[in-house]
Amino acid sequence: MFRKLPVDLTPTEESPGLRVRGGTKYTRSQGDYVCGGCGAEDHANGDNDVKALVDDYSTNHGPAHKRSGR
Image (cartoon, rainbow, N blue to C red):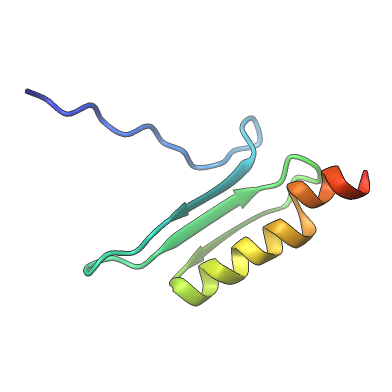
């Protein structure tokens, strides 16, 4: 039986959003975002940097644009 290949969930301008991938014993955590409100984008590797990326996205992009009407 073959496993279905995972879909690429990396955000793009056509499909903005936030993607976070947890690290494993052999890999570091990763995160990406593309903001649908202003077009900003960022990428991070490592737990601390990914946490900062999520905080930035949550505070200044994505949902923040819907709250403030920016």
